[in-house]
Image 1 (cartoon, helix red, strand yellow):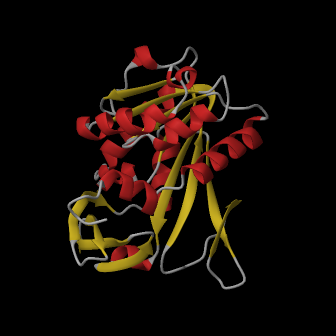
Image 2 (spheres, rainbow, N blue to C red):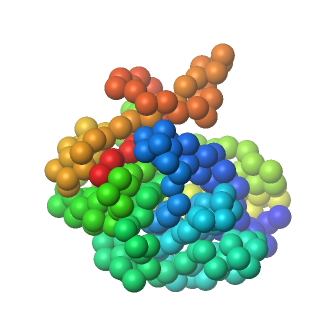
Length: 267
């Protein structure tokens, strides 16, 4: 594999996403909160739609809507991820180019979505409080009466620094580049690069212009938007002190240099 032959979307799904674990978490926590299985999922900022595709695989009554603004990425999702599904599964997933601030009502199930998810910190793209509040209100109006909004979150002191981190993957190296950070505005320019064994590099495969948000800010926005409860799920540690992939609800976090957790806002 070289920079010329590599597919950046394949590299992203291999290096960044673990949709099996993600869907495990959404499915399990919704049942725990609502004592019923979730059926209808909307994946906001869906990108490759790998999570939405995994959702419809999980049950014959599961439906999914994936929303994203980027037409080429959605075309890739239709050609590569959706085609991995059986025909009856493909019939239960809709991939739509659209703004998550104005989701298509016609594509929503009757009664609303059980789950709306915004993962990979994609909602950080909203860089003002009024815009984030608007998004939370739109999500709330899209949910069923007992629906839940799930997000992931990246924080810690390392999130407020300019740095590069490298991680070896099969056949390539993933590079997370926190390129610029402005502490006065919270504006955050992040990039993803990929490096290959032949010395070639795929620079700026993905770029993000985000704002760093805190969990207390997001809790306040969720409650202001009308959600009745906000939950945080913190990752446990293994014997070596590294994350073990098990997330449990907590009211107290740890001041780690870098951490990822899940958030849930209940309608």
